[in-house]
Length: 272
Image (cartoon, rainbow, N blue to C red; front, side, top):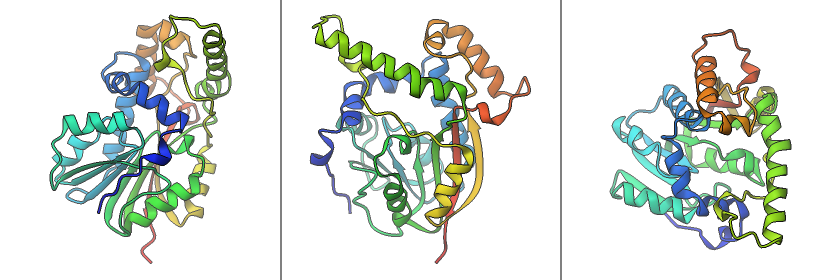
């Protein structure tokens, strides 16, 4: 049933980036920073939306298997797909593969999995960086059973933090790293060098229309990660950034949802 597709992924700069920093990314889930909190709150809210206990679950872009134990605790059988060989290696070290747990290296746009097999498909932090996003969603829906649940995250273009980081901060950081690399700077850490690609960000309306156009019924939209401390201040003032983000996420102050850096959309595949 499972077939790995590694050769077409080797030259992708985003895959190379996550291969270089797989272990670092894994550790970030426990970091007491705004970024670490964002990963944890995203996972929590995805689990709150999950409604297929005991089913077959696919995580597209599974990373270091952060959803696996939660799905097993809900009686599910779990499949994780990720383009990064290093991420899959972490997954396989962490979980012994069995009839309930499977991992393979693969492409979200070409899932080597059967039609109408999964009760739920999760896709977190992936869709924004893909070259053919409609094809990826069609692939997820192809492997999803009729009336199955798709939970997918988008980065919110209306968020001041997300807009700044995507269109201002990351391009400057990339240019800085490229300049240092040309100068042969021996202190440059390759694991921190990001891909040259800019993510495609969505408004809430555009994300919902995109999914509806592919034949899904949007059930619920939830915002997450209310960060207003722009990079690089969120890294320099870690305690302050984390404290403020937690307060905004917990609703201690009246916060408009359009500020949320990310959106989690729960959708249903058509029954026909």
